[in-house]
Length: 324
Image (cartoon, rainbow, N blue to C red; front, side, top):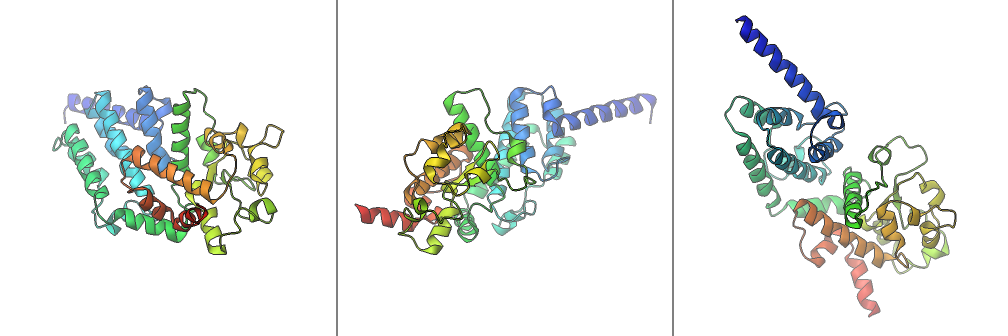
């Protein structure tokens, strides 16, 4: 190896180390605002603060591709694939793909092919898009995901915080507000003692007449489903779960001391605008969240009746029809 070759190798290594640091610490980088945003979303998927599965591919891709639009295109498709992984209760990296009859997309292999020039950046994006399309178009993927939620509910879903956080960002953009009312690090804090960052609006302990009266038409299993249902789960901007807990809905919205949903996150404010909180509101908010999921990640969940079935709340629709 010549001195020139050694110099080139060292310079390339230096560049790689610098780029690697930027990718796993996007806020310390000189990437564009949108690049930082989407890299940060990929990091949120990971349970390892120092590494996330897509990082090697991003490093090589960012070395090869200087066009910001193409970089963002890659980040967006990786985020959509990552969310499909989150939708599964199978927590091992991409193991859920085998469950659905699809071989996993090997990020290291793609990075190697790109590095060696076997594939161009555009081809990498195309491969990922084909992979995702093939996956979401499988006939049984929605029914299998639905089966997981019907068995375990939405509260125990390990993707619930990311999903609710993305919905919060959607509401922020919709309101055209600049202020963030939900901090991801605080919201995602697992070591929060007696405080919880996700609230059951219809509480888990419901001894007060204001709650028992509203849900008296439902049996115990149905009430349990309603408590854990997607539409009944709310991200809290402050650790106030212990103070709101089992209070009546009106008190949860505002207790007169600037504490309550009315003064919280955009999601909390949206719920506080409801006049009441019954099974009907849980169903309707669940449908709204599924519509958001469908549009945000391009996952076809079906018509209204199919979404009600996805939520396992057909019994609510039946009760509402009886009232007419």
